[in-house]
Image 1: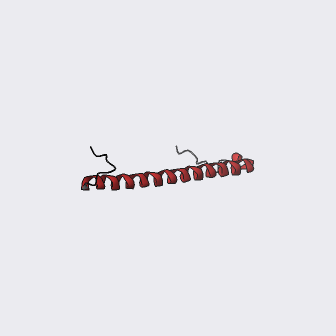
Image 2 (image 1 turned 90 degrees about the vertical axis):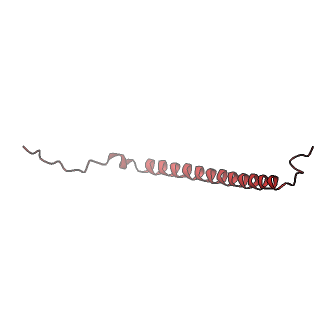
Image 3 (image 1 turned 30 degrees about the vertical axis):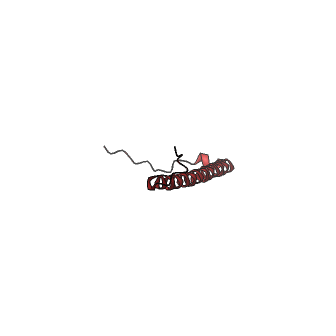
Length: 71
């Protein structure tokens, strides 16, 4: 009985090609996901650092003007 590695049928060739393509796509998606995760962490760290560096920014007064109630 032949093993899938030694089979040269057209169907097996297509399966091998699709499997290889799928594996490459999954690898690329994984790499992209890791890059995005790192960028998100860096952005969050930068935002936290900037917030801590500007304590006065937490005390911004409400700048909306009050409207007199209509009677």
